[in-house]
Every structure is written in structure tokens, then in C-alpha cells.
Image (cartoon, rainbow, N blue to C red; front, side, top):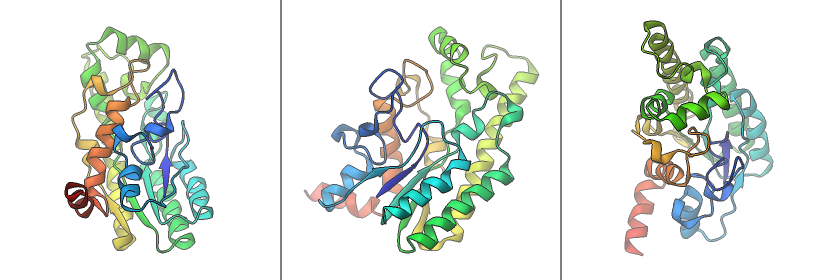
Length: 249
């Protein structure tokens, strides 16, 4: 199997200071406490190999290259979580357009379908970035990190402002994420039973500030990675069957 995506799937900041912690990835992580897709599936198939093809900082424009890598690895299962960096940019005007997002995602899906036609593809929804503002705006530490590191300024700029213009900007960024997720659902559906979307499980989850890194107040920490695994795996191809098998074991 292979995981495609960005720093969330690389588990950036989930174990060390501004570094990737791929062992704690919700998808292909090997740390038992995360209960990733990989560790659950490896319990069913001990010969399973996992590749983390995600890259920190990646946007949807990078997904096709990752898909090509997964094809070269001849994977039978791929997970995709991509889009946070397309909405969380330096300004609202620099967000990826919905049309471009759709074109790029469809291209990557075509690469997978043509290269590994029997592979199963699980697509996770883009997290609700406005939720981060909601849970972190009253934290001085979070506000400082967002400002110092220039994190997601399209949405997190002026976090304490109640001005109508700032409120409207936050809503527009959230609406862009909603549109991205609709694209993911629609394009995944085009590829039939070999593609499964999470039904907005990640987007809808009401995560808390304690589930994000205390260094940048943006990336999921180990607890957040565990939540991602818990929210996505039951909606995967093996969710129901694997849960029964685990219970029996």
C-alpha cells in the first residue's frame, strides 16, 4: 500500500521539532498506538508493505507525481489526503481554484487507474480549517505560532478580529474546502467500486486544540493522527470486516 498527500500524512510535528514522523502517520504509520490503516491491515496480511509517498508542503499539483510513484511500486491500495495546502495559503487570493483542483485530482486518479487498474483507492476529505481557528483563536500560543510561522494566513490572519470582512474571508476559505471535498467525492465516484470517499468524516470531525501540535498549532499530533485513523479506517474497504476480525482475535 501507499499513502499520498502532504505533511498531514507525513505526520509532520507528531514526534519531533518540525520534522516528519512517518511512523505515526494515520495511513502508513507503524506505531501501534496510532492504529493506522497499515497496522490494521498488516494484522490481516503479515506480508503487507507500506510506502509513504506523501510530501510535506505538497499541493494538489504534486499529486499526479505521487500517483506515478505509487504505480511504480505496484500498490494494491492507496490512500489520498490532499488539499489543506491548497486552501491554507499566504492569502485568500493565492488559494487553488476549484477548477484546477478538479483537473489535478482527476489526472492523478487516471494515473492510478491506468497504472494499477485493480488497486483500491481511499480518499479522505480535507479537514475543516476553520475549525482550527475556532478552537485556537483564544490561545495566545496558537495565535503567536500562526503569526510567527505565517501559517494558513488565508484563514488565520487577524484571528481575534470580529470585523465583517474577516468573518467573510474565513467563510470563503471554508467554502473553498467544502468545494474541494465535493470534487473528491464526485471524481472518486467516477471510478466506481475501486474508489471510496470518506463521506466528509475528516472534514466533519470536531477536533480539539489538544489534538494538534503544540509547536505550530496546525498539524495533527500523535493524538490527532490516531483520530484520523479512527475516523477513516471504518469507512475504508475493510472497515466492517476488519473490525469483526479484530474483535474475534
